[in-house]
Amino acid sequence: MGYYKHHVPGRLRIRSPRVRRNEAAAQETERLISQLAGVRSVQANPVTGSVTVQYDRERLTPVAILRLLEREGLFDPKQAMSHDQHLAHTSGRMGELVGKVVMSLAMDRALAGTGLSFLSALI
Image 1 (tube, rainbow, N blue to C red):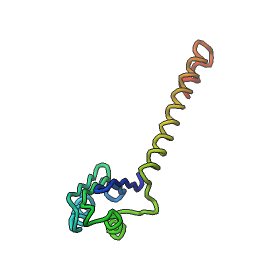
Image 2: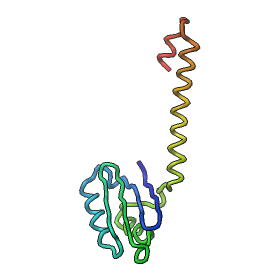
Image 3: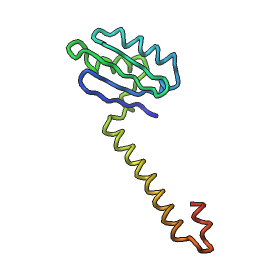
Image 4: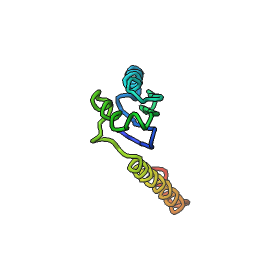
């Protein structure tokens, strides 16, 4: 899992490999972000590495939150994937998996009842 960010006004969600499977980093991230003026709530999930921040748009910007996380080594904007990039990447991987399943089924049918049917089990 790499870095990921998704923003809608008043809500920022990031994923950080440093927070994933690290309860101490998740708690430290919550503590750091909650100190920013304008933060309404912050929740860091150590299982997924996801950090969700609800904030007052009049008092705080997502850029300020990201800068804090970057400064603390919790977020790398150069490696971050946007929501659209994440969807494209995920759908591309799903397409590959579906293609493999379809090919496997086609091979199984094509080789059924032949001496080469054992090949379909290997593919």
